[in-house]
Image (tube, rainbow, N blue to C red; front, side, top):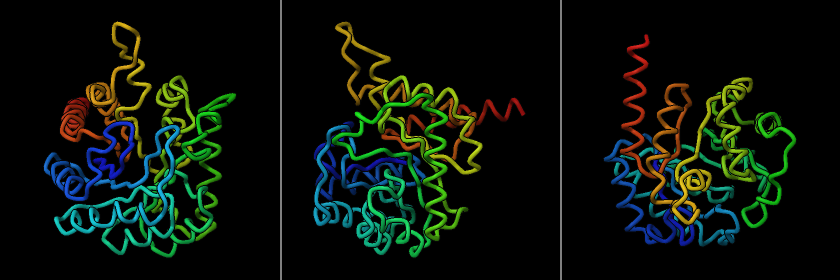
Length: 266
């Protein structure tokens, strides 16, 4: 899943793809690099980000979704808003990637059920402006699994087909760096939910903190792609349903290596 942030303030590439023409060109480049899905989002969810209003989010994403769909892309829309989800599917989006897992707006789950498209349900504890204050767990793995189980149950109760649900542990969302590493180390425990999993760790701060410069400052986001690809190779051996990444070619290469080793291992 290749990322197209149509935002001025995303942590990894804020502002670079804000103009529709730039975002469309970037999406085409990701397709050429081998992305299976293009994830188009108009709201930054980095810690501390301020939400755009709904009309602005629509203005950002709809032209990009429309043109990339015309070019043959399979589009997921990264949104927490039902109205944006409806408009995005009408414009060609085939999947809804809701980082709130239906908790940001009570109308989202019945809306997704009515639309009948696949749904990514992510673990979530609050909006970007204060989510890191909620990164408090006794056992982050078991609590995230329990929370996700409740979110999935709620989605099914609202009419979403269980076979269309994909879970996401929500790396970096109300999680410290240590929490993220614990989740990765114990990812097999999520198999208890019996659902495919999307993992989004590309360029995240905990990777930058692993690779500090001489002064101890985290490596900048654009210099975290090698570490991201290393994780993709590990995840491909597991495997997971998908990885959400910013640099598609490097991660495609990582998957190819992991697949070849798997073939040898038989």
